[in-house]
Amino acid sequence: YYEIEPSIIKNEKVIVNNFLNLNEIAPKNLEAILEDASKVKKAALGKFASKERYGNCLNKRLTGLLFEKLSTRTRLSFEAAVLKLGGQVLNLRKDEIHLGHGETLEDTSAMFSLFLDVLVLRLYEEEKLYEFSRHSKIPIINGLTNQSHPCQVLTDIFTFQEIRGSISDKKVVWLGVANNVFQSFLHAAAVFKFHVVFSGPIKFHPSTKMLEFLNGHDESVLTVEQNPIVAVQNADLVVTDKWVSMHDDKLRKSDLDDLENFKVTKQLLDYAKQDVLFMHCLPADKGQEVSRNIFEDKRCVVLKEAENRMHLQKSILRWCLNLF
Ligand code: CP
Ligand code: NVA
Image (cartoon, rainbow, N blue to C red; front, side, top):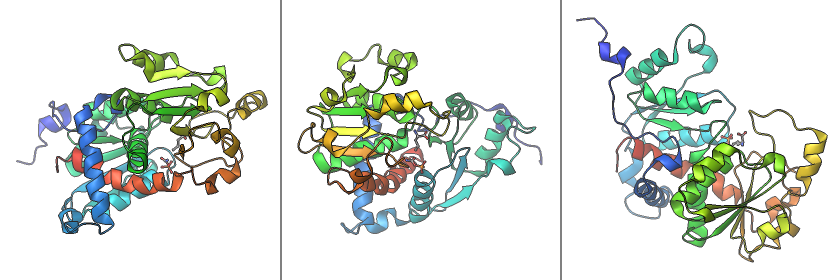
Protein backbone atom coordinates (compact mmCIF):
# COMPACT_ATOMS: atom_id res chain seq x y z
CA TYR A 1 0.00 0.00 0.00
CA TYR A 2 2.80 2.36 0.89
CA GLU A 3 5.24 0.86 -1.59
CA ILE A 4 6.71 3.12 -4.24
CA GLU A 5 5.50 2.12 -7.69
CA PRO A 6 8.41 0.20 -9.26
CA SER A 7 7.74 1.97 -12.57
CA ILE A 8 8.72 5.26 -11.00
CA ILE A 9 12.26 4.03 -10.49
CA LYS A 10 12.49 1.79 -13.53
CA ASN A 11 11.05 4.28 -15.98
CA GLU A 12 8.60 2.84 -18.41
CA LYS A 13 8.76 4.48 -21.80
CA VAL A 14 6.41 7.42 -21.69
CA ILE A 15 5.82 9.55 -24.76
CA VAL A 16 5.84 13.24 -23.92
CA ASN A 17 6.40 16.42 -25.91
CA ASN A 18 10.00 17.29 -25.09
CA PHE A 19 11.44 20.57 -26.35
CA LEU A 20 15.10 19.57 -26.67
CA ASN A 21 16.39 20.65 -30.09
CA LEU A 22 14.67 22.30 -33.04
CA ASN A 23 15.81 19.68 -35.55
CA GLU A 24 14.04 16.96 -33.56
CA ILE A 25 10.62 18.59 -33.39
CA ALA A 26 8.34 18.09 -36.38
CA PRO A 27 8.14 21.31 -38.45
CA LYS A 28 4.35 21.28 -38.12
CA ASN A 29 4.71 21.38 -34.34
CA LEU A 30 7.18 24.28 -34.48
CA GLU A 31 4.78 26.11 -36.80
CA ALA A 32 1.96 25.40 -34.35
CA ILE A 33 4.02 26.84 -31.47
CA LEU A 34 4.74 30.00 -33.50
CA GLU A 35 1.08 30.36 -34.41
CA ASP A 36 0.02 29.86 -30.81
CA ALA A 37 2.61 32.42 -29.64
CA SER A 38 1.15 35.00 -31.93
CA LYS A 39 -2.33 34.47 -30.42
CA VAL A 40 -0.97 34.32 -26.89
CA LYS A 41 0.94 37.56 -27.44
CA LYS A 42 -2.09 39.34 -28.86
CA ALA A 43 -4.14 38.18 -25.89
CA ALA A 44 -1.47 39.35 -23.45
CA LEU A 45 -1.46 42.77 -25.08
CA GLY A 46 -5.26 42.87 -24.84
CA LYS A 47 -5.54 42.82 -28.62
CA PHE A 48 -8.35 40.35 -28.80
CA ALA A 49 -11.33 39.39 -26.82
CA SER A 50 -10.26 35.92 -25.75
CA LYS A 51 -7.74 37.05 -23.13
CA GLU A 52 -9.40 34.77 -20.57
CA ARG A 53 -8.71 31.78 -22.79
CA TYR A 54 -5.11 31.76 -21.69
CA GLY A 55 -5.34 33.40 -18.26
CA ASN A 56 -5.66 30.10 -16.43
CA CYS A 57 -4.71 27.50 -19.01
CA LEU A 58 -1.90 26.01 -16.90
CA ASN A 59 -4.43 25.55 -14.12
CA LYS A 60 -1.89 25.36 -11.25
CA ARG A 61 0.37 22.90 -13.12
CA LEU A 62 3.84 22.98 -11.64
CA THR A 63 6.91 23.94 -13.70
CA GLY A 64 10.33 23.17 -12.22
CA LEU A 65 13.39 25.20 -13.19
CA LEU A 66 16.85 23.72 -12.66
CA PHE A 67 19.65 25.97 -13.89
CA GLU A 68 23.32 25.01 -13.60
CA LYS A 69 24.31 28.30 -15.25
CA LEU A 70 23.37 31.93 -14.79
CA SER A 71 20.29 33.31 -16.53
CA THR A 72 18.31 36.51 -16.53
CA ARG A 73 16.00 36.30 -19.56
CA THR A 74 15.30 32.58 -19.75
CA ARG A 75 14.56 32.20 -16.06
CA LEU A 76 12.52 35.37 -15.80
CA SER A 77 10.54 34.77 -18.99
CA PHE A 78 9.66 31.20 -17.97
CA GLU A 79 8.66 32.30 -14.47
CA ALA A 80 6.53 35.14 -15.86
CA ALA A 81 5.01 32.87 -18.52
CA VAL A 82 4.00 30.22 -15.99
CA LEU A 83 2.52 32.65 -13.50
CA LYS A 84 0.63 34.60 -16.14
CA LEU A 85 -0.92 31.37 -17.46
CA GLY A 86 -2.14 30.43 -14.01
CA GLY A 87 0.59 27.85 -13.32
CA GLN A 88 3.02 27.51 -10.44
CA VAL A 89 6.79 27.59 -10.55
CA LEU A 90 9.40 25.90 -8.42
CA ASN A 91 13.07 26.83 -8.54
CA LEU A 92 15.30 23.83 -7.88
CA ARG A 93 18.63 25.17 -6.71
CA LYS A 94 21.46 22.91 -7.80
CA ASP A 95 23.29 23.37 -4.49
CA GLU A 96 20.22 22.25 -2.51
CA ILE A 97 19.48 18.91 -4.19
CA HIS A 98 21.40 15.61 -4.09
CA LEU A 99 22.02 15.43 -7.84
CA GLY A 100 25.71 14.79 -8.42
CA HIS A 101 26.32 14.39 -4.67
CA GLY A 102 25.15 10.89 -3.88
CA GLU A 103 22.06 10.58 -6.08
CA THR A 104 22.02 9.57 -9.71
CA LEU A 105 20.51 11.60 -12.48
CA GLU A 106 18.13 8.70 -13.16
CA ASP A 107 16.70 8.75 -9.64
CA THR A 108 16.60 12.55 -9.53
CA SER A 109 14.67 12.59 -12.77
CA ALA A 110 12.22 10.01 -11.41
CA MET A 111 11.60 12.21 -8.38
CA PHE A 112 11.01 15.28 -10.55
CA SER A 113 8.47 13.23 -12.50
CA LEU A 114 6.57 12.50 -9.28
CA PHE A 115 6.05 16.10 -8.28
CA LEU A 116 6.33 18.34 -11.32
CA ASP A 117 4.37 18.64 -14.57
CA VAL A 118 7.17 20.02 -16.74
CA LEU A 119 10.86 20.78 -16.21
CA VAL A 120 13.09 23.48 -17.72
CA LEU A 121 16.80 22.63 -17.61
CA ARG A 122 19.80 24.87 -18.26
CA LEU A 123 22.80 22.54 -18.21
CA TYR A 124 26.42 22.45 -19.29
CA GLU A 125 26.44 19.06 -21.02
CA GLU A 126 23.85 18.35 -23.66
CA GLU A 127 24.22 14.60 -23.00
CA LYS A 128 22.86 15.20 -19.48
CA LEU A 129 19.78 16.87 -20.92
CA TYR A 130 19.07 13.78 -23.01
CA GLU A 131 19.74 11.53 -20.05
CA PHE A 132 17.19 13.50 -18.03
CA SER A 133 14.66 13.12 -20.81
CA ARG A 134 15.28 9.37 -21.09
CA HIS A 135 14.37 8.91 -17.44
CA SER A 136 11.58 11.44 -17.28
CA LYS A 137 7.84 10.99 -17.44
CA ILE A 138 7.26 14.71 -17.74
CA PRO A 139 8.25 16.97 -20.66
CA ILE A 140 11.74 18.47 -20.56
CA ILE A 141 12.53 21.88 -22.05
CA ASN A 142 16.08 22.78 -23.06
CA GLY A 143 16.83 26.19 -21.56
CA LEU A 144 20.38 26.16 -23.09
CA THR A 145 23.30 23.77 -23.08
CA ASN A 146 26.90 24.19 -24.24
CA GLN A 147 25.63 23.06 -27.66
CA SER A 148 22.21 24.62 -28.17
CA HIS A 149 19.64 27.25 -27.25
CA PRO A 150 16.41 26.33 -29.04
CA CYS A 151 13.98 28.50 -27.01
CA GLN A 152 16.03 31.56 -27.91
CA VAL A 153 16.24 30.77 -31.60
CA LEU A 154 12.54 29.94 -31.95
CA THR A 155 11.86 33.36 -30.39
CA ASP A 156 14.23 34.93 -32.90
CA ILE A 157 12.37 33.30 -35.79
CA PHE A 158 9.09 34.56 -34.31
CA THR A 159 10.52 38.06 -33.90
CA PHE A 160 11.84 38.17 -37.47
CA GLN A 161 8.53 36.93 -38.90
CA GLU A 162 6.53 39.35 -36.76
CA ILE A 163 8.42 42.28 -38.28
CA ARG A 164 9.30 41.11 -41.79
CA GLY A 165 7.08 38.12 -42.65
CA SER A 166 8.22 34.61 -43.54
CA ILE A 167 11.90 33.84 -42.88
CA SER A 168 11.90 31.17 -45.57
CA ASP A 169 14.57 31.87 -48.26
CA LYS A 170 15.98 34.79 -46.27
CA LYS A 171 19.71 35.34 -45.73
CA VAL A 172 20.80 35.18 -42.10
CA VAL A 173 24.41 36.13 -41.36
CA TRP A 174 26.09 34.99 -38.15
CA LEU A 175 29.26 36.85 -37.19
CA GLY A 176 31.99 35.82 -34.73
CA VAL A 177 31.96 32.45 -32.99
CA ALA A 178 29.96 29.37 -34.08
CA ASN A 179 28.53 28.64 -30.63
CA ASN A 180 25.44 27.06 -29.05
CA VAL A 181 23.03 29.72 -30.31
CA PHE A 182 24.56 29.42 -33.79
CA GLN A 183 23.98 25.66 -33.75
CA SER A 184 20.28 26.18 -32.98
CA PHE A 185 20.14 28.67 -35.88
CA LEU A 186 21.51 25.92 -38.14
CA HIS A 187 18.82 23.56 -36.91
CA ALA A 188 16.20 26.25 -37.52
CA ALA A 189 17.54 26.97 -41.02
CA ALA A 190 16.99 23.35 -42.01
CA VAL A 191 13.42 23.43 -40.69
CA PHE A 192 12.33 26.92 -41.78
CA LYS A 193 14.32 26.84 -45.05
CA PHE A 194 16.47 29.93 -44.71
CA HIS A 195 20.17 30.35 -45.54
CA VAL A 196 22.85 30.87 -42.92
CA VAL A 197 26.16 32.51 -43.76
CA PHE A 198 28.85 32.17 -41.10
CA SER A 199 31.71 34.65 -40.96
CA GLY A 200 34.40 34.47 -38.28
CA PRO A 201 38.03 33.50 -37.69
CA ILE A 202 38.92 29.91 -38.72
CA LYS A 203 39.43 28.88 -35.11
CA PHE A 204 35.77 29.68 -34.40
CA HIS A 205 34.24 28.08 -37.48
CA PRO A 206 31.37 25.58 -37.14
CA SER A 207 32.60 22.33 -35.58
CA THR A 208 32.72 19.02 -37.45
CA LYS A 209 29.69 17.92 -35.43
CA MET A 210 27.71 20.95 -36.56
CA LEU A 211 28.70 20.25 -40.17
CA GLU A 212 27.72 16.59 -39.79
CA PHE A 213 24.21 17.74 -38.99
CA LEU A 214 24.07 19.28 -42.47
CA ASN A 215 24.60 15.93 -44.20
CA GLY A 216 21.37 15.07 -45.85
CA HIS A 217 20.18 18.68 -45.84
CA ASP A 218 20.09 21.13 -48.70
CA GLU A 219 23.65 22.53 -49.15
CA SER A 220 22.40 26.11 -49.14
CA VAL A 221 21.59 25.85 -45.43
CA LEU A 222 25.14 27.01 -44.60
CA THR A 223 27.84 28.98 -46.41
CA VAL A 224 31.11 30.08 -44.82
CA GLU A 225 32.48 33.44 -45.94
CA GLN A 226 35.72 34.78 -44.50
CA ASN A 227 35.15 38.41 -45.41
CA PRO A 228 32.51 39.95 -43.09
CA ILE A 229 31.70 42.70 -45.59
CA VAL A 230 31.00 40.18 -48.35
CA ALA A 231 29.11 38.02 -45.85
CA VAL A 232 26.61 40.71 -44.83
CA GLN A 233 25.86 41.86 -48.38
CA ASN A 234 22.19 41.29 -49.09
CA ALA A 235 21.56 40.05 -45.54
CA ASP A 236 18.02 40.12 -44.18
CA LEU A 237 19.14 39.38 -40.65
CA VAL A 238 22.52 39.79 -38.95
CA VAL A 239 23.12 37.97 -35.67
CA THR A 240 25.95 37.70 -33.21
CA ASP A 241 26.53 36.63 -29.62
CA LYS A 242 29.19 37.02 -26.95
CA TRP A 243 32.53 35.67 -28.13
CA VAL A 244 32.95 33.93 -24.79
CA SER A 245 30.01 31.80 -23.68
CA MET A 246 29.41 30.78 -20.08
CA HIS A 247 31.14 27.43 -20.59
CA ASP A 248 34.11 28.85 -22.54
CA ASP A 249 37.62 29.68 -21.37
CA LYS A 250 38.83 33.27 -21.60
CA LEU A 251 40.08 34.25 -25.06
CA ARG A 252 43.73 34.94 -25.80
CA LYS A 253 44.73 38.41 -27.01
CA SER A 254 45.46 36.99 -30.50
CA ASP A 255 41.92 35.50 -30.70
CA LEU A 256 40.40 38.81 -29.65
CA ASP A 257 42.44 40.56 -32.34
CA ASP A 258 41.23 38.06 -34.97
CA LEU A 259 37.63 38.46 -33.88
CA GLU A 260 37.77 42.26 -34.01
CA ASN A 261 37.07 42.21 -37.80
CA PHE A 262 33.75 40.48 -37.13
CA LYS A 263 32.42 42.99 -34.60
CA VAL A 264 28.94 44.20 -35.57
CA THR A 265 28.96 47.94 -36.17
CA LYS A 266 26.55 50.36 -37.83
CA GLN A 267 29.03 50.65 -40.71
CA LEU A 268 29.05 46.87 -41.24
CA LEU A 269 25.24 46.76 -41.21
CA ASP A 270 25.22 49.40 -43.95
CA TYR A 271 26.51 46.70 -46.36
CA ALA A 272 23.41 44.58 -45.72
CA LYS A 273 19.90 45.10 -47.13
CA GLN A 274 18.40 48.43 -46.22
CA ASP A 275 15.73 46.77 -44.10
CA VAL A 276 18.15 44.35 -42.38
CA LEU A 277 17.46 43.48 -38.75
CA PHE A 278 20.13 42.95 -36.12
CA MET A 279 19.67 40.43 -33.30
CA HIS A 280 21.69 39.45 -30.23
CA CYS A 281 20.26 37.08 -27.62
CA LEU A 282 21.91 39.06 -24.78
CA PRO A 283 23.74 39.44 -22.48
CA ALA A 284 26.19 41.43 -24.64
CA ASP A 285 29.77 42.48 -24.11
CA LYS A 286 29.17 46.00 -25.37
CA GLY A 287 32.19 47.26 -27.27
CA GLN A 288 33.46 43.72 -27.91
CA GLU A 289 31.30 41.70 -30.35
CA VAL A 290 29.10 44.77 -30.94
CA SER A 291 29.77 48.48 -30.99
CA ARG A 292 28.17 50.31 -28.08
CA ASN A 293 26.03 52.51 -30.32
CA ILE A 294 24.38 49.58 -32.14
CA PHE A 295 21.72 49.34 -29.44
CA GLU A 296 20.20 52.68 -30.37
CA ASP A 297 20.15 51.84 -34.10
CA LYS A 298 16.66 51.28 -35.53
CA ARG A 299 17.83 48.04 -37.18
CA CYS A 300 18.59 46.56 -33.76
CA VAL A 301 15.66 44.55 -32.34
CA VAL A 302 17.24 43.04 -29.23
CA LEU A 303 14.58 44.39 -26.89
CA LYS A 304 11.78 42.93 -28.98
CA GLU A 305 13.66 39.62 -28.99
CA ALA A 306 13.91 39.67 -25.22
CA GLU A 307 10.27 40.71 -24.76
CA ASN A 308 9.10 37.93 -27.06
CA ARG A 309 10.87 35.31 -24.95
CA MET A 310 7.93 35.27 -22.53
CA HIS A 311 5.30 34.85 -25.25
CA LEU A 312 7.23 31.98 -26.80
CA GLN A 313 7.85 30.31 -23.44
CA LYS A 314 4.09 30.33 -22.89
CA SER A 315 3.49 28.52 -26.17
CA ILE A 316 6.38 26.09 -25.65
CA LEU A 317 4.88 25.18 -22.27
CA ARG A 318 1.41 24.89 -23.77
CA TRP A 319 2.72 22.58 -26.51
CA CYS A 320 4.69 20.44 -24.05
CA LEU A 321 1.59 20.05 -21.91
CA ASN A 322 -0.68 19.27 -24.89
CA LEU A 323 -2.79 22.37 -24.34
CA PHE A 324 -3.42 23.11 -27.99
N1 CP B 1 19.39 35.08 -23.97
C1 CP B 1 19.36 34.36 -22.84
O1 CP B 1 19.09 33.18 -22.82
O2 CP B 1 19.66 35.09 -21.74
P1 CP B 1 19.85 34.53 -20.26
O3 CP B 1 21.20 33.84 -20.22
O4 CP B 1 19.82 35.77 -19.41
O5 CP B 1 18.76 33.58 -19.94
N1 NVA C 1 26.29 31.74 -25.98
C1 NVA C 1 25.86 32.29 -24.72
C2 NVA C 1 24.39 32.48 -24.72
C3 NVA C 1 23.84 33.09 -23.46
C4 NVA C 1 22.37 33.29 -23.49
C5 NVA C 1 26.29 31.38 -23.61
O1 NVA C 1 26.13 30.15 -23.73
O2 NVA C 1 26.81 31.86 -22.61
